[in-house]
Amino acid sequence: MIFKRKLYDDMLRWKQERNGATALLIEGARRVGKSTLVESFAKSEYKSYILIDFSHKSKDIDHLFEDMFNLNNFFLSLQTLFNVTLYKRNSVIIFDEVQNQPLARQAIKHLVKDGRYDYIETGSLISIKRNVQNILIPSEEQSLTLHPMDFEEFLWAMGKENGLNFVRIFYEQKKPLGVSHRTIMHDLRLYMLVGGMPQSVDTYLEYNNMQKVDAIKRDILKLYDTDFRKIDPSGRASMMFKNIPAQLNTNASRYMIETAIKERRTDNIDTIVSEMRESKVVNLAFHTTDPNVGLGMHRLMDAYKMFIADTGLFIALAFWDKKYTDNIIYQKLLFDKLEANLGYIYENLVAQMLYAAGNELYYYTFPTNKGNTNYEVDFLISKGNKICPIEVKSSGYKSHKSLDAFSEKYHSRIGEKFLVYTKDYVKDGDTTCLPVYMTGLM
Image 1 (cartoon, rainbow, N blue to C red):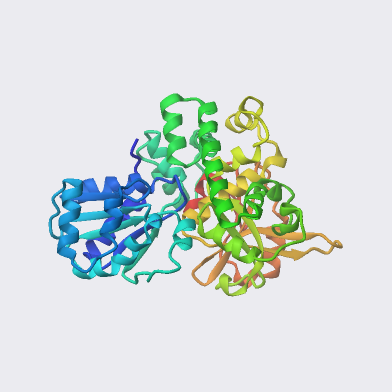
Image 2 (tube, rainbow, N blue to C red):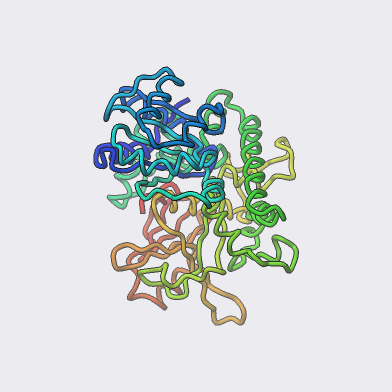
């Protein structure tokens, strides 16, 4: 199925505003739906298009990019090979999986300057970075990131065309949803289980069977594991990725690399973590030493928490060693029987929702008055000239000691403080208790 994606509107703005002055690079993890989105856009917004899939192409296509001196010949050859007529300023050429042909990406500079057609590229960031070392990266390139389907896109796929429209109204009016809260939470728990990878969503819609969905998610995780082994053949990136659920479950104040890779060797780890982050498969929340506007200026690059970009994949990875039939998390989550010690699933979900809404992720810890224990603010976001601390609870429990201590310590810097939990909207003093499905509306 072709699903409605929010990035489509951003692509349309690029087409209208840039009018061929730049190419468009759609970044994102593998299997998030880049190719499907781009081809759908080309069919709807242009008179004709040519899609060159560099993961499956002939040698004749490769040879075209070895000599770009005569663009008339290049375009004539393309039209002949694909049996497609190109129309000046009304056709687009798509370089799909462009990482597999670096010369095509290098050619963007000259193609854009020529101005006859539009150009859209897609590709896996891991491979893009690895394959461009000996080419000139085009400056005539605008990039957009496609994330896994967010909760509203998931609702659209479920046939709920109004998405979160009425939820936004209640959020803006600062009112609880009442009887509708239970329905939205059920939809959210289903979203957590299925995830936002289009193939998983498509499988759920076709079969209404979570075992088949789980199999698809595991296939995607195996694909990512293969990619991480390309980043680091020693397997450390793979081990760090697989250890994400266990790391969050320990509630440590940062990702403990030594625990994940089980060895003292940590050389080149910074590069590995950077490339894992650039792959868009994981999201990183950095510890900030000064919780103030401009959080990025005070982040600790070696103190971070690591999350999986799709919570559906997170659940499959968390229970990787169990067969689907033994994976009781599916039943417990769907019927709201999740124990408190599995609350790290909600923490991963909130990280995903905040990041998809355009927020960089930061957190903050500071000591209590009781020996070696710390308060921890799960996430910090900035709004205007203030910061908003966020604490995540997997239940309806409204205790928020960390928020209160943080508010007392930094009261002049705080705009609004949020407790994100599973119950309905309510104000508890100066703390906004926010149902988790409203996270992206902050």
